[in-house]
Length: 285
Ligand SMILES: Cc1ncc(C[n+]2csc(CCOP(=O)(O)OP(=O)(O)O)c2C)c(N)n1
Ligand SMILES: [Mg+2]
Image (cartoon, rainbow, N blue to C red; front, side):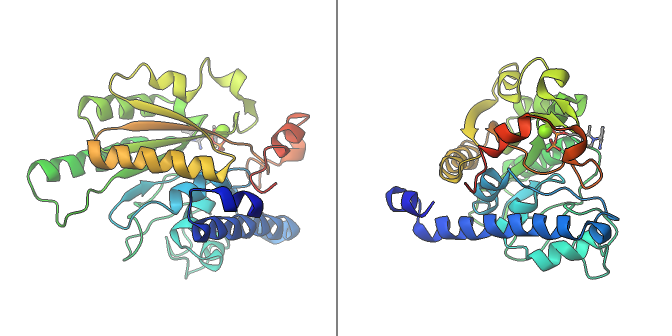
């Protein structure tokens, strides 16, 4: 990582920050595993394998933006500036959890705080963030059309989804409305080729990038979600596209899954040779 940093077009400070936060995310997952008797009373997923693409997103969203995340987006939250301690308060269902006062699962953020993108309450039902997120983009487009949006900024919405959830009908409805109304939304699909213990091959006939081709007006992009620099540059372009064109884009990011599906569906129960293949794409290696 350090050797590559010299040649990179990305600011050294950003590269160092990303590396530091990747190490943080990895250590959090190790701590959770080492203390599984305590932590696994509370269902949680970690972002292991998805750190590069998530940090690329978390480090580039602005405080004027809106985001709908899913349960695996821990590194995205670290990138936005949430502290491990704050995330752990949610994991342990503590009163001081900044998102819900200990009432929701780990990785279910909800924030409206100066300096952070706005994140509405997140559902645990997969894919269910797609329609509300698209609704937020619809709201922004309406406010803009009525010249009611304050300031010079041009906010965007980021909707983050796993590859499995994209097969749901809800997501098709959201895409349909985004292209029909030309909404300022970026759908970020993190494709780890798993939906709990079902493989990509078992649950879909195409990936999200191919699927997006069926939605006229949905711009699409593939990025290697396991490599920070490629993810950062790809997302910079995608964010710029939505911010300036006020139109939707889908970014398909392939990334490995290095941990368990969740603390309750452990890798040793369902993963075989694929794990060593995924490990070769570890963003930290
Ligand atoms: C509507 C709904 N159906 C099923 C589930 C059970 N479920 C939880 S996670 C998951 C798999 C999601 O896979 P993917 O979207 O690829 O995300 P990943 O965990 O791989 O990051 C499923 C089916 C759920 N939570 N909600
Ligand atoms: Mg998946």
